[in-house]
Length: 353
Image: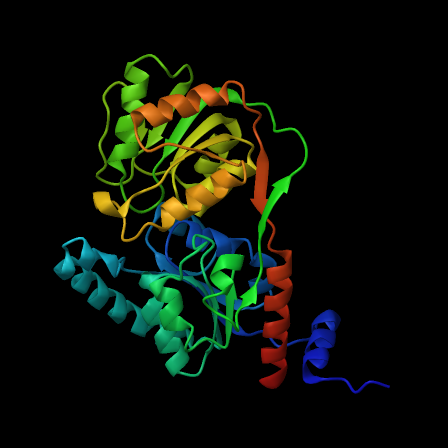
């Protein structure tokens, strides 16, 4: 008979339902980073978990049902955009909060999808003995993130989600979660919903929608989510932010979604069978710290899932294409990743007894 290995013991224990509950920290900045952790709920809900994230509409909605601690926003790219003092102030505030959170919860395992806003949380938890599982963001198709490069050295497990990125991390686990769904997209209302994401305003996108509408090329009713402090075109329905539940309702109704190039916004719209027109934020225009959104949009467009636009003319062309284009359904399928994480946590729980 084959001798049972420690990992086999852990899996068998999980199946019996008597494994030890771990203190698990779920660390992610706002937007798509945080949404991917929500897809992993069957894994972390079995443990004593808490979230660490930024104070966004999604984060606040999450706090209605789950334990959530907020840390200040900062990004390493702020220095590249000429705001080093703003970055430094955010980083100091973030460090102070992270120290208090890690000292209070003393996590045994950290599962993180990045990025900068949770770096101190991840590092401090690791210093105090926590195992760290890093999931390189789905937003990274070709180039490794700075967060990934820095945390790969302290991670007990490292996950990538594109074959191209796997070349940067030869020892990483690779899971491709993107899945196109069969079936007919659900019926929709004549609604165009434009969204800039959870954190930053994106005036180029909002202004493009307003310009195309002014020229009479948008037939649908329009609602725009602008982000805090974003431009607010006159004569259009505009909100700065939305609770996640309201966002989901809008996506169920909207026939067209115009969004930035974040994976969270794109995937959430594709799950509801919307026409998706994605406009990536660009580094050269000072809208984002690097061009990972351009990579994301290119990868999704190559798979036939979205249309892209960079300005009002591009948006006008994309809208015309939606009139003859079938809506598609797509999602992320995290089953393989969930199984990997569940086995890892089961083994960790067994060793801690």
